[in-house]
Image (cartoon, rainbow, N blue to C red; front, top):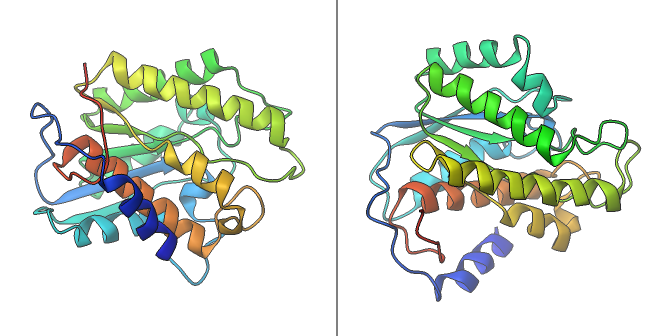
Length: 241
């Protein structure tokens, strides 16, 4: 937690107000977390996974008037293509609908960056667009996209150089998708990539966060939510076009 607080203090001085045209969802806010094993919570043992840490931090922010909770539908081993095709997304949407989710966040790409998979930026973007379209058609109209976090070790199926090159490309795809539909899609966390690059001690195995890493990631996701929907003043943001 100390590192997370240092992060906030370091960026707060340059912060300015949230654009007035962004309206936060009605309270209570229930966030559905789509993702792979990182979202599911692999690496967390004594602490809750990042998806559960996210609403805890939002509920502690002093300027927040909403009540936050989350529904975790992350599935270990999945790629963006797995979510774009087949029953994976339909099952998750049924779970989120039952849980009254009104905001969806997505962090996919870690498994796409495996050496044997190596999903291109164009294919990754297409997969995410398909997911977005399906979510919107089902009534999920607030979607936050997060860049996958940094891979800090050559861990069997991943290569530190080639896999992270893809993750950077996926981050660019996330930003482009959000820019193309600013009413429904929001450019989420990119600091997680840099955070795990600079703080490998927050990783359990070079791929998944450990307990402290899940706390850190949940905090960064909370900041990203704040940038999209709250007038937090916690860090600088650019006005959406």
